[in-house]
Every structure is written in structure tokens, then in C-alpha cells.
Length: 253
Length: 76
Image (cartoon, rainbow over all chains, first blue to last red):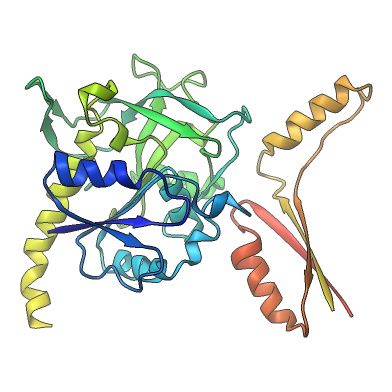
């Protein structure tokens, strides 16, 4: 099983993602430059955070047309797991692989702080697992579980038309919402003004995931939180299952 | 020839920049200002214009139809 971390000019969380996948989880991981034509050989595709193309025009607007994105879209269409973090989430929305868009924070400030993301759907490929922290304590996915992770963005204000928001709710596509320390979904706990406190969503088929918080910066006690491990554990388990299931088919082909 | 493209946030989308500028204008002695919306204006020079292609680019690249509307003006 192999993971790709896509590098756009201006990506700056690529090394953090690579470190977590490779060193914390022992997964074979490669950087893929945005000019590459294919990510077909990978089982998991990560679009890291950063400021691709200097955020010119709109965040993610130009990266979306990078050569590699054609292959990312094709692989997503085939059901492969794709995860976009922060700028990666913005790129996935611009590419229409996820619904909605991320606009300027309602405060107009760049927010850089730890937030609580409340788990809303513990059945997705990205949010179902159980993982041991370095002190041996287990972190087990359950609805309402709070993950403490950092956010660092100027454009994380999730918007979508009312119909799309209803669909997201109805199809259980909302994976995380910003909450306070007690799990209450409040305006005060919303760092950027996102509709319905949305922090992370999946697409309709559940194989493309985008979130504004940075799980890769929350996988080590040195960084103040290990809660991000739950997301990586989930996606790696899911990618492993998909690989096993789909391998006889790929051999036939 | 020249093409001019105006990109504006959709009416239904809150424009945080516009709200901040509106408030600043009120503090600058214009208490009656009702709203400000901030968009982008682009001047494009092209040898020959395929207006259909320009519209396609406005839709796919220069604006994001989820949050913005655009207007294209082509000058001879």
C-alpha cells in the first residue's frame, strides 16, 4: 500500500503529512510533484496545506488546474481515497470534487489556534478507527468525540447554498463541526464563520474528504495533541481494505 | 482587443471584506452607507477573441460559480 503527498508550488505542510504517514504509521509514502501526470499507482492521495500558487485569484483556483489534478479526479471517480487538508480542502472544492467553497474568515483575521472538532459521522473511511496514543490510552471513534487540532488559515469560512447544506446533512457528509470544549456547537467556537460550524466534509460517495483543521500537526505529544492520529489510522485502514478487495480486479486488468 | 471581466461575490454570499469596509466608511463620516461589496476587475488583452472560450475561462478559472458571478465585456 502506498500513499502520495501532492506538492504544489507553495505547499508547506507536505513534509508534516509525509512524516506522519511514513514515520508515525510506517506507510510507504512518496511526494508527487504537481506536474506529474498520474497518481494511479497510489492507494491514498493526500493534498497538503499551504498556499498553492500564492493563493492568487482564489485559494486553490490555479492548483486545481495542475496536471496531476486530472489524475486525482479520475482516481477519486474510481473510488480511491483522497484527503485534502486546509489548502488541500480548498483545492478539492475548487476542483468540484467536494461541494461548496471556502471564503475569507468572517473576522478577516488569519486564525492560528487549537480548536475542537466534534466528530459527527463515525462511519466514514476517514473517521471510524481506534488508535493508541503514546501513553497507551485508546482514542476510539464515536459520534460526539472531540478532537483537538490546530487550524491555521485566512480562508476557512465554508459556504454552500441552502440546498447543498441540506444535502450534506441528509447524506451524513458532515464529518466534523467546530465545537467548544464541552462539545456544544456555538458561534463562539466557530473560528471562521463556517456555515453550520462545518470543519470537514466528505463527498457523496464518501471517498473524498476535506477538512480545515490540521490532523498532521496533532500526531505527537510534543505538539500538544495526538488526536489527529484517529484520522490517519482510519484512512490507512480503509485504504488497506480497498487495496485487498480491489487487487483481484486489478490483476485481471 | 481587450476584454474586461468583473467578478462579484453572489448576493447570497456574505462578503466579510465588504462588511468591514462598510463599517470603516461609517466611521469615516458616512453613517448612511448601507452596504459595500468587494469584487475583482480584470483587464485582459488578447490578439483575437473567441468569446465562447472567454466565457468558459471566466466560469472555470476567473470566477467560482459557487460563490461568485462574473460579467464579461469584450471591446473591439
